[in-house]
Amino acid sequence: MSDVLAVADHRRGELRDVSFELLTAGRDLAEATGGDLHVAVVSGPVEEFAEHLAVEGVDVIHTVDRGEEFNHDVYVQAVTALAEDLDPAVVLMPNSVNGLDYAPAVAGRLDRPLVTDAVDLAWDDDDGLVATREMYASKVETTVAVDGDRVAVTVRGGEWPPAVESGDAEVRAADVAVDESRVGSRVTGFEEVAGGDVDITEADVLVSVGRGIEEEENLDLVFDLAEAMGATVSASRPIVDSGWLEKGRQVGQSGKVVTPEVYIAIGISGAVQHVAGMKGAETIVAINTDPNAPIFDIADYGIVGDLFEVVPELTAAFEE
Amino acid sequence: MKVLVTVKEVATVEDDFELDGLGIDERYLEYDLNEWDEYAVEEAVQLQEADDDVEVVSVTIGPERSEETIRLALAKGVDRAIRVWDDALAGSDLLDVAAKTRMLAEVVAEEEPDLVLTGVQAKDDSFGATGVSLADAVGFQWAAVVNALDADAVLNEDVAKVHRELEGGVEELTEVDLPAVLTIQTGINEPRYASLRGIRQAQTKEIAERSLADLGLEAADVESDLTLTDLYEPESEAETQLFDGSAAEAAGQLATVLREKGVGAE
Image 1 (spheres, rainbow over the protein chains, first blue to last red):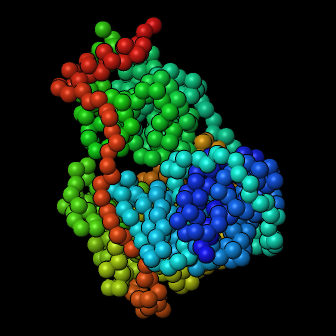
Image 2 (cartoon, chains in turn cyan, brown):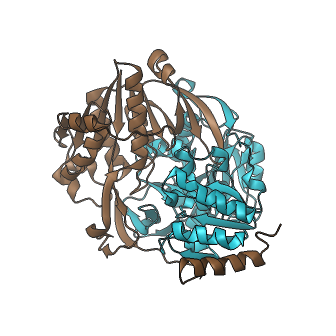
Image 3 (cartoon, rainbow over the protein chains, first blue to last red):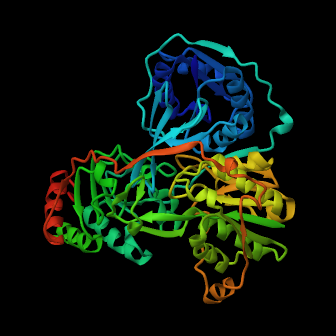
């Protein structure tokens, strides 16, 4: 029998959405392998988390009650020990910032091949696991076959629907001893990134600028447009990384999640990390030279063209 | 103190491209230093500028072509470089994390660095896992997705005090003792451009070659457990209404639609 072990993701007392997406991915896999779906929940209020994670299709939830917050040394030890005990065909972990802080070490200790950032998974009794993942900044999709019948995988958030139907999983306190002498990392606190003067999450219309703007001085084009429209300026990661705009204006996975009525993406290719922060906008407009840019996959309206020509014309149209 | 920076030459794909079997047609690829590694190199060079006793060594796994990219790191202030390559690697179209870890672990054993800096991920295969995998394999501490590093603590206390960039604008403050591996996020610093003097000096700096045999490894040690079975352009699910014509015409049509949605109304 080939079981699946999924590891929940949580932070500061709350389970993250990807945890429930992992359960869907795990349930699909367990159905294909004919095995059970085990879930590990490590640190935090594990009993409370276990109640939420007991969705339909989950067979056993293993709780490891040690500490409040994520610590990778605790996770590596706990997940490795559980996987050695259960010997699942697949260990499923989130491709979150914390997931990437422990999953590679778990795979190494278990001597399992590791596939990260999977967007789809299939299991075949003959071929084993086949993962779909992107390469070259999402320009292409690939399928990857894994040699061996014991695998470790991290899955991308937002690719599987969350599992919600309640079920009747058995909850077990895992018999896992954490060796405190091997907990070397010390988490001393958290910091919220300062928002600055502008709250982009409150704006009805966002004019958002990306790498296509090329130079800092060209930002005037975007501010002129925003002023003509009565909109607020936000940005994708490269603009903030370059120090051209403050972090509080960053839209995306590591920045803010925004849900304006209108979101106008200017010179933004639409990498998955950016889209995670703005896909909830009511109307999405894209202006980009590359007709294949992923932003056009989610845009309602678009102009394939040079922003340096289009944006001034759009500004003029609103100044009339 | 010695800082080892892993760097990788990666291919960027042009907007319009063609496939060639399980890869992208060479004509549409441009090779460059991986974006995340630029920030890792800058972080290392800044440590060296703060303390003369810091030596910065770069290591890459890549074919001869990648020397050009490695020189770029040398031009920015890296002292010397190591390039790992072997005929046994040439046939692999997707080198997995375990294989890279085994090679880099041997280089770490040879160089004995106090600090290893890697990029969070490589832009081509985007595994995002080699740094942490390497750390655990060689028994170093680690921190993934670092967007702030306290240089003083590294140089004077042998501790890496870092911020880890979590999702949603939250940073985790973490400390690990050296030796450690940190995976460096973009935005942690402002990578410099290579100066003309730096570019000249880079020509005389050493790039040492290491084969698998030099590292005490065999071809079987770097056999990838992952096999690329298909590579294709994702199907667009777009239902985008595109506005055509001149820039003025397209912008005019878009403005009309946006006004109907209330944009620009006082």
